[in-house]
Length: 104
Image (cartoon, rainbow, N blue to C red; front, side):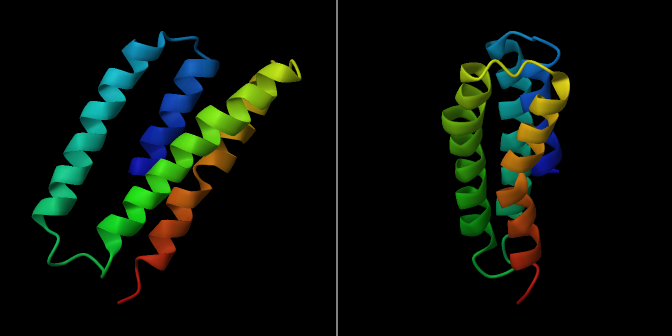
């Protein structure tokens, strides 16, 4: 779910041109809900699952906001497909964490 909301956040900013704070507020609310549920059931999640997901979300945020978004703006790539590709590439750490954390 975190990857889906991260992708929706990035696409709403760059394709739908939603104001940053109007997109960030619901994203942060959903993220807090996801993390509270995960923290509540931390006994049944894989070992180091919360830590791995925290690293993956931080990597997604840094990858998108510090690397891909400025690079696309620098090169003037304004097609929505470039933004979709950047969003999909940036959520790969979260998706990779899904499979790595599924092992016990």
